[in-house]
Image (cartoon, rainbow, N blue to C red; front, top):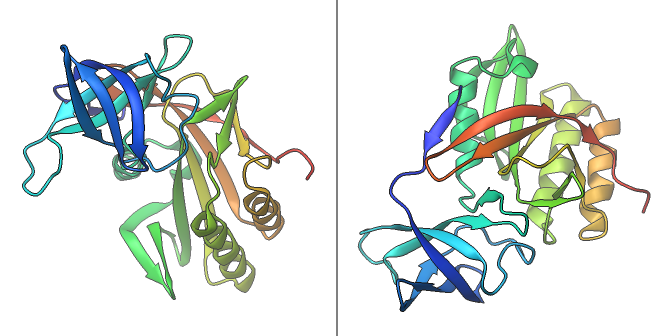
Length: 237
């Protein structure tokens, strides 16, 4: 099983979001501020009075000694708020050949630049090259893992570029959506949040870009890569 430890964390009560990257919580009777790595809206998770979990950090230059790492859903499930975790999980899974859907491809390197863009992973199979982009999913509605949860011009540009490169024959483009929670049954583009991303999604699939999905098992000790999820076309725009 591919997993990453959560490390030492403490329970707190969410009070308010100060800006994209900072939240305020009540921790053991004291009001503290915590860094939030995920810049998405997270409106369904960051609800006043909801439980969150914080990790202490002693990095120099930080405005706060806390980082937000977990949030509780309305049903009591846990969602990872660490946007870098999916990439770390997938890198480990690729190295260990733990993704059957990609086990014929070998990991060459991460953070691979192509033109003005940088893609998460470069994979190789014989003479063929694949550009794999990993997207973190935190929003789930009635079993649907939805990406994005806020408008993302960068995400749309990634899809457009992957489509162009796939059509050119230079690379095989692929996107892997990783739901940082266990209650997603499938993944799709959130057309009601970012219709331009949804259009790019449909165009990229038609161009031959491959789409994959994975859930995660999240608890207060670790996050583990879960089952494969189907990736469905979004509702018509």
